Length: 240
Image (cartoon, one colour):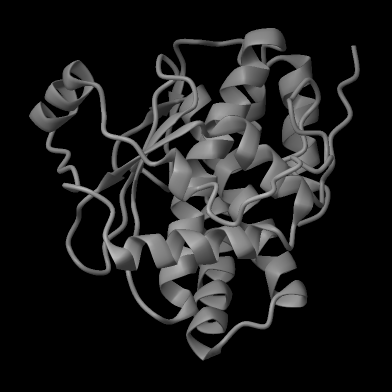
């Protein structure tokens, strides 16, 4: 069973559907085509937990998703991973300049995200981050079903992304997801002609994510994972 990891492209995982191969996407609006309304029972449950759903896709949201698809095309392996992991996208509402993204293992392929509107690249990059964030959660969950990474299911530890201690799986997922986003933005700065707003956004997020990831107690995390989990963590650190 192959368990090779790609430190410079952490979204390429062993056993994953996307192995750096083109997803054979023929439409620039494939993300728009995956927009849907939530099932009534899911809407009811999440609304009770404070989620606010968009009534539909606005023109500004459509433009943002179209731009996201064009940007993803610059990193074929990441495009393939998102294409294979995300089958349905439910748009959420939030306050301006505040982003929300959500997914759960029981709803494979379904993500809930805010889709910022705007004519500059910052809006598209924020949308891209929300989508990639949840796609990588789904991808890692799929990997864990075949390749256990967590040994101690009860242990908790501090997380830079939550106010309260989290189970080790939550910390590992956070470290992985944000490392994928950081590496994505690093590669985009070399591949895409970013406008001023886009370059400010990627530069700021690259530094912010690196600072947050540096707060993770890797020794404590490594103590509660499997041998494969330690190899996985080492791969995330290999090309920082």
